[in-house]
Image (cartoon, rainbow, N blue to C red; front, side):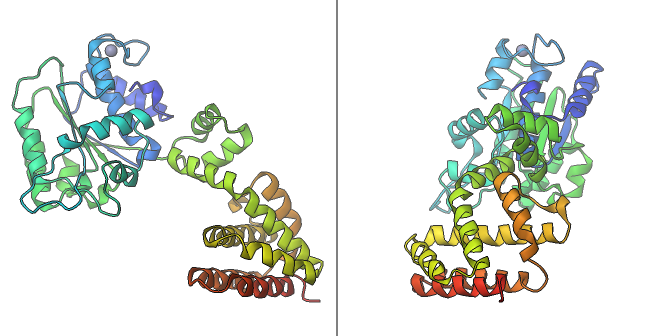
Length: 377
Ligand SMILES: [Zn+2]
């Protein structure tokens, strides 16, 4: 991965480039921040830059033998340690990061290093189980580092999520960081540095990877086909997190039909059209439980945002496009008198849907109650 493929963080890239040029390469670094903000991508780009034999324009070349092998994660001097586990593991079975390199290459190649911990566990077949970094993995890393480097100037180890080490491997890791290592680089990529041993942190040069700046992230989203103003909104709402921004964008797409149902419910309620409200309820009752739950959750979101518009808190209102337009007009009907009662009705309906109640009864009662709360006349 090249620096140019890491979204934003230009100041940090500058700092890292300077450290390399001036020969101040620290033997242990920590990139602390969410993978959705680029912490892992930055670690991969840095290792590639450091070992590139033909650096140019402040970046690795992407073409020399070293770059090519680091890009495909096949460089013999680059070792990766990440939390792993196996379903139905036998007590004596040793599970090492190395066993999962094919899945690691696939997910990094596909996402450019922007994926969540949960996505990783799914990729290695753990459903609700978590991974961890075992003392065996730290031992294996030591064994590999004891060889002379094969071809690179720097041997490098990237430890993704070091917070997944329990006490024994964490202490082993601490001992390793305490020793001076010639031409060996440790890069810790942590999402929760606060749970690491303070002594580990103090032996690394820490870099904080915060949210990607709005402009860079919006540009990335636009390159994926999201319209300009929406891309800027998503960049802001996601706190500079690419994964979160994409998730929000997907939610918005499927929210369209639920939004229409919400608009219809509110219009009929405002106009006291009881007969049509019953027809509305019959249609929703036929939708199936999952869409019904989504509709109700989405309606709570729209209501809360309408209330914020009503209260003048526009800066924390997370709406745009058609949603914003409707909720702005609708917001005078939402206020202190009814917001909590409306949300309560939606949550009751949600609970009843979850409990597999009779959908016709649930939504008929729901539609008529909402109507009374919106237009009490
Ligand atoms: Zn290169």
